[in-house]
Figure 1 (cartoon, rainbow, N blue to C red):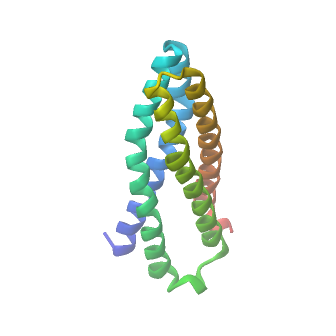
Figure 2 (tube, rainbow, N blue to C red):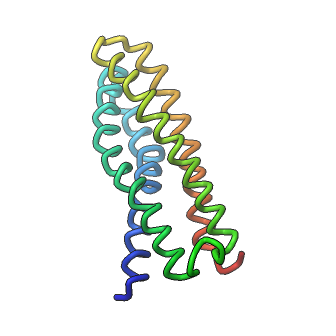
Length: 154
């Protein structure tokens, strides 16, 4: 495998972990949890899910720009020669990372505190805010993937 192939493969896997994880959580896990679990159990589940999933997201957050910059240098000989779609993808990555850090640093601690105190109404409200931001991030991630997939057309 070529150096570009290795870097590209790592990049795609990191993107799949992050965007695919959000898709699974939003489209599969959330509806199943709503149907089968009462509020307190559902909130406890999400605290654990976020804790485990966010470890993987942090790996993606670190790996994506490293591999992205590597691909830029291997394929385009630097940022100056990179096409516009690469710049758009970098901007969307920044948006996704900012939303993720907002959830991780500001909202998740609030959810953990509410669950630990068994303050279910507050926990539900915080989870609702997290759900909306994850939904926004999922849409941004899907747009980013679509841009990457359609890149020869740009």
